[in-house]
Amino acid sequence: MRKKIFSKDVMEVYRRLFERFGPQGWWPCERAGARGGGRLEIIIGAILTQNTAWNNVEKAIANLRGSGVVSSVRALGAIGSKELSRLIRPSGYYNVKAGRLKNFICFLKRKYGSSLDRLSRLKTDMLRDELLSINGIGPETCDSILLYAFKRPVFVVDAYTRRIFSRHGSFSKDASYDDMQRFFMRAIPASSKLYNEYHALIVRLGKEFCRTNPDCDGCPLWR
Image 1 (cartoon, rainbow, N blue to C red):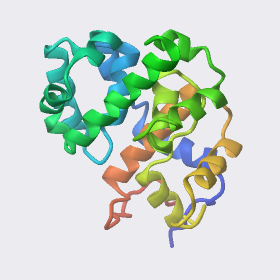
Image 2: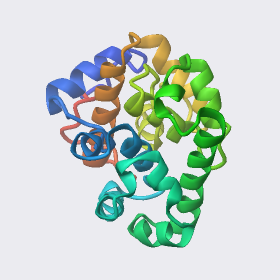
Image 3: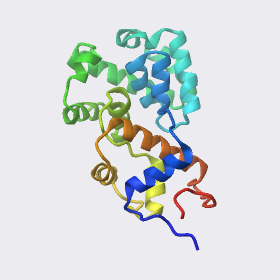
Image 4: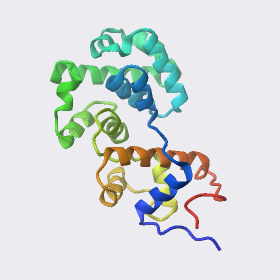
């Protein structure tokens, strides 16, 4: 009979996923940033990907690129809310997300003179507090920005993480975001590169095997 791996051996999970899937070269926003607007585009992507699939976000970002909106913080701030909503329509909840993007830009202008470089000089704890103070940016979006835009060693917890690790007994399905994040950050060396890869591998496992109706045959987390 097959057995699950030891549920609390977090690095063993990583090793098994990496052995099966290999390096992912991910997160999607990081790839987008490499092609286009860099750090700002990653932040935009982190906000737009809330409650939608990444391929929808790619369409929205393509629209923003075509309008030159991702070229600078000032360009994003100058565009009207209605036009911004139209451009990001493919990402869903476009009026809400346009408001969240504007909230971020207003925060950055008011407190940091529209400078991402100035914002980036904050220590990680302070930077996280500042991002969480923005209406519409919750823990997952905040930590995605920290990890992918600012290269901080902060583990991102998403729905796939909760599903996979609660099924394997690492924590309950009702565990808080902070409790789940602490679970990983206590068990994994602090490395933005490692956290990036681990998150990508979790998403890959969630999409291919640990779906809502799991397909356990061939799953790398079974012996």
